[in-house]
Length: 108
Image (cartoon, rainbow, N blue to C red; front, top):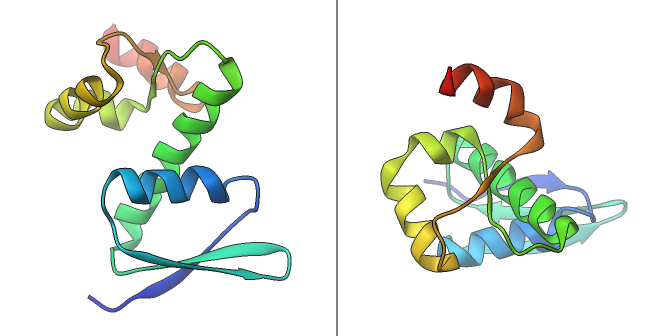
């Protein structure tokens, strides 16, 4: 797949970079005026998942609790959830704020 550059805000830059490193996705990073750009050879859908995971990392950092934050997509993916639980050393998690309504519907 061809490497494509995608825009990200400077606020999200460290979180996106962290997720790319965590998931071992090769990338190039450059700054361009008022935003950062990440060159990655992944699909748009996969990059959206990286951004979603970065939002989870940002929410986790802002909470200062150390409790992992997962998107509903991550919760539904058993393998990914297990991998992240092992990485963080805990099974408990919080739900991404943007997914809280969908989470309520999901758990019934």
